[in-house]
Amino acid sequence: MGVDLARYHAWEGRLQSPWMATLAIVRVALLQIFRRRSYWVVLVLGMLNFLSFWAAIYLVTQFDIPPRVQERLLEAFGFSAYAAPGQDSGYIKFMQRQSIVVMMLLAFSGSLLVGADFRGGALPFYLSRRIDRRHYIVGKLLAISAVVTLLTTGPALLLFLEYGMFTSSASYWLEHWNVALAVLAYGLVLCVVLSILLVTLSAYLQRAAPIAITWSSLFVLLREMGSQFARATNNQYWRLIDPWRDMREVGRLFFGQFDDIERWRFAWYALAILSALCAVALVALVRRVRAVDIAT
Image (cartoon, rainbow, N blue to C red; front, top):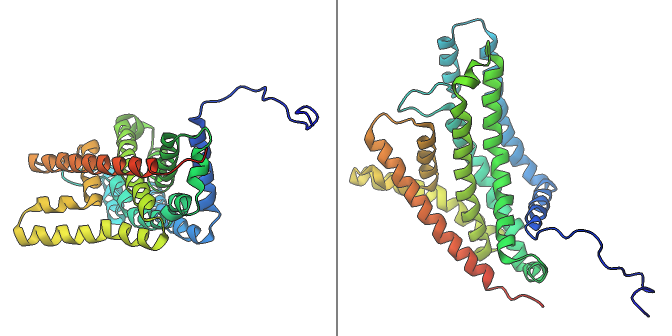
């Protein structure tokens, strides 16, 4: 039977770039997460934290009281729109409070989004098509980054818009436009660091239990170790072994909240450590994906 009789026809449309496959990987990954009801419990916890901040800003700004009093009331709720030097901005505090939810969701998402591709043999099938290894890696990194943005950067920007919207004028947006850029920059750091570390761990460990244990130890155990070493040696630089602490210090660089040169230098050391950690993890991830045999 000829090709025409078998109802097969040549492709007549315009071929798109293989990089468009990364968007398909992101879409499928988000659908996989949203279809799991157990993951919705973690997402709801993250949204409850956001709603508590939203309600606090709304209630305080509705009272006809001086701005300084409003700021003190918001600080009592844990949010500060005008952070003084040496103090964390309310946006950093909010994004850090989301860290527990993010850690829980990513701990169980790694096996679903990355580990299953190695265990089930799906990765060789994908790579045998027009999807290259770099497309696969970028797609998975973007998928994890989308989850992180959904829980941290997006809600923080909504809080920024809300605070300016409920004040008397748009002066807050105009005078503090750099806050939105700082939130985006800090969110980018969270996305890059967390996505690279999680995808690398998931590619090697593959199963949910080892990934969850290692992922939790990477942040909880190292935090406790850094605190213990810092108290024992009276050297605060030991706290830099905690990746969450490092990301928070880097966030302070974007917000410019330093009251002395020592804390400023501390933040730059944190940036150097995160850069080295991500570079090593990315090289390990590339080597792991390259080791997969492609079916031709």
